[in-house]
Length: 143
Image (cartoon, rainbow, N blue to C red; front, side, top):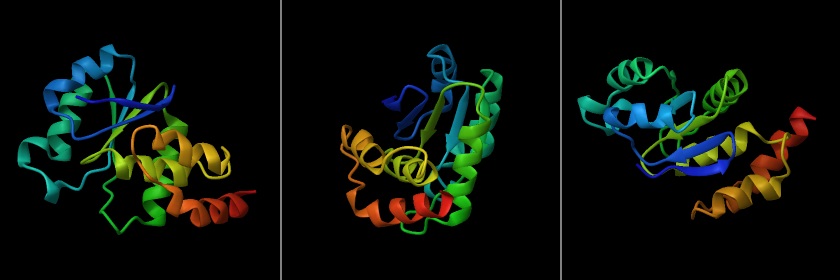
């Protein structure tokens, strides 16, 4: 498990295992967002199995599959809603943490400066500078 705290309330991770969920809860997370489509992973890690393990650990589980290169407005809205509804820190995961960083940055456009939305994930190697026009456009729409 490789948790990367983008902010104190939002972290990303590459794929986690069902067995990781008790430790994730013990680390203080309250919500887990699955940004990985089931078709990318073995059945042992499908959303239904992860949901059962998350809920057994006392976590809220949100399924928001983001297909690489096919991020939708619905994905962004779902991520934003899950973050807004979270009763505490959120851990989002995908294959590498990149998609979870991208969907976070777009969801938070207008709430944080673009420099932060690009710079905070960059500390972990996630290069979101190419999203700046989209971040700026979303921020302008939400103003």
